[in-house]
Image (cartoon, rainbow, N blue to C red; front, side, top):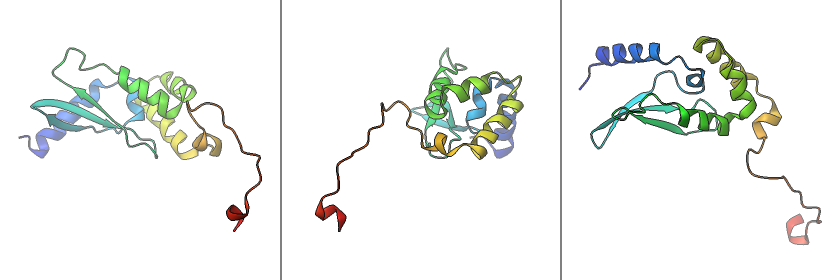
Amino acid sequence: MLSIKDFNLLVERLIKEWVSPIYAFFSPTPAIEYTDGRRSHVFKCLARSCSKTIRRYLDKGDAKSTSNMWRHARSCYGEDVVNEISEAKDIKTARKGVKSYLANGTITAAFERKGKGKITYSHRPHTKSEIR
């Protein structure tokens, strides 16, 4: 079992290795969990309405792969936001960009339907029971 001090040192060392802009869309300090004896990092998405967590097992050859994080960010934030943030020169700039997007997102972006098809409206009048 790791002490708090050892855990903090471990996380600080790992954070220095995570330089991809994709980490800006997730909580800066991941949870470290054990599932069936396998250690994993669990990254939580920063979007307000999203409770998705991305789990990366550390005993595999692709322990540093970020493809699942990219896929989730594109579905959660949208292709244009992810492309804009991916052009950031470093992780600090990317985090500032994501933070400003989360704080100043437009109302249409907040209610935009992603991947659900065309929006349709009913033009039928309400029935008597619906009016009451």
